[in-house]
Length: 266
Image (cartoon, rainbow, N blue to C red; front, side, top):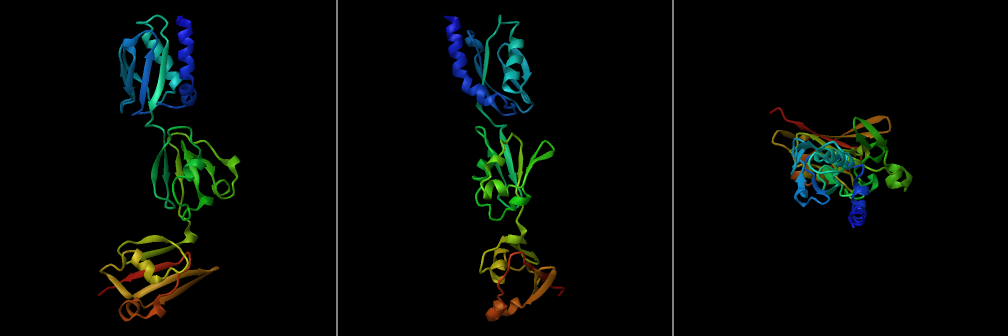
């Protein structure tokens, strides 16, 4: 009868163990420890910030950094002085350690919780618009090295064979696509990169940058634009535009333009 119940217990635990066999336990994770036939040793535990966990029958044990099977083996060894041939089951109730980090100016930075096995494509599909992100220069950074670079084939061309499974702690870097932005710098309240859309004007960009700062010289605004290997400088009389309504000064912008607002010395 005991053997039959043991087999049943193993079968019930298989999905959890199969899902968590490569999972590395981390600080804050919630675990459930069950010792067969020893109800007083059955307990839910939280891995503390020092990486250790406490449970009845044994002293503190380091859990962080171990896989579930490794932790189960160590708990079994610790309990062997109290229970003959202990049958230990450990399941992951809630993962806090299983996170990846999305950073870079191409998207809003965020922390992505992985409640289950998660691939790069699944995360990319959930972070919102990637219009401003340079997929060609994007990469996954793991344990001190890049494990995948250039997401354009995967995300834009359907080359799904390039998809990779993410691991806890992975950093997904999505930089700004500079040729799809307009940059407002200098004497404005909020210097920033603005995603370029057709019809964007100087006034639109300045308003998005919080307008001029109190030190700005409104007659010293330049648009710096690349034309092949050449650099073109276009002066803008924004004072005439704002105060006189001179729409000839409300110049249409192009992707990659820099709007430079100079400071006044008087």
